[in-house]
Image 1 (cartoon, rainbow over the protein chains, first blue to last red):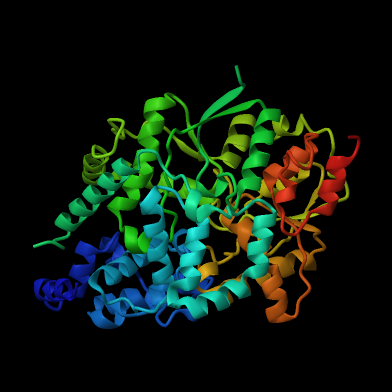
Image 2: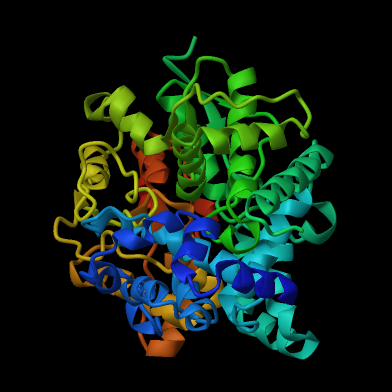
Length: 207
Length: 303
């Protein structure tokens, strides 16, 4: 994947804005930002962003490629869409942040240990496997992502919640063995494979 | 024949023994009382949720939603698609929106769809709507009031709308900053809404409740605290993620902040089921981790 990063650097030279416009979901909107800062002020996790959205937009235009793509910032997005509905220029900010995070992840530049990046990957793999969320497997994988010991510890921290969910019939104790998922899961797998192929071809991610 | 009929997209959390199974139970009861028929989209798949973006990217995410919508077009002809989950609704509606405005993406989505079974072609024929949208727009507040036999008198309830049933699409005619429809629904079932609930559209943290628990719990604390401040005895919401996050982490928040939260968080459909004379079980009240005793009492009355 490191090679993909190198080839993108070579392809776009120092024009990071152009790279974002071509490869990031809704990236063509970035140049429309007028730096008012409403997005940054509206974000529920605003103070947790190293570079809030408004800053990210300016950094893209300033060609600060590494700082943007290696940032933890976009991974703070909770998908609340507050920035989208308040942006006076109507930029689809939530989608651009998702797109940037996805692109950074695709290039292998996203922070490896960022918990939201890791959870997002576990989540997608979970649904792509059977077509539907397997909630027990999802939480188990999340708890045990740093190994057995910390998994047991996290499991204990979450014990009361887990028991509560089980008692109220909101968690399947047999989810690891008896999760049904979609009937046409083979078809879904082929469909997703094709979708990745098309997207990679379009964005020049394959030679 | 039922009064209204829809193509139904229940979503993963609504499945049996999943985190919003209590929502599903109450939606079924509510729809029965209102004579609404829900035709489940056969073999529906996950919408990808918002958090799917990191690994799913753009086209794979849209293709997942396009598959559901294409099956619906083929099987439940001429019906609007209705989702009960905010994230499912948003995901499906976003795909419809994006594919309607991007012919290239539409062609690519259909190219991928051909790989799945059922000879699917997505055309974009059906509307994608949320259950509250359908209740308000197709039936209307007056019709929703008619079946009330047990008004929830004396209850003060904070209507927590949250994010994804409100933004970016929302309910027509409502503002993003202070939507009123949930308050109206609370009034209709005979309870008193918290008019000035200032955390009505605050984000609960969504999927980051899993990955960034401290940051999310700070959000949830504000949401619950404000409900207490205004004298509410219950929070009600239209979103399964909001419901789960705001309800189940109260114990951890109590430990973290030394608070004594014990606030029931229910769905609008649970209030309506009880007000329409349904039992606690029909309203899915046995699915509450923080029990809703007053609602259970009213449901048990006269049985």
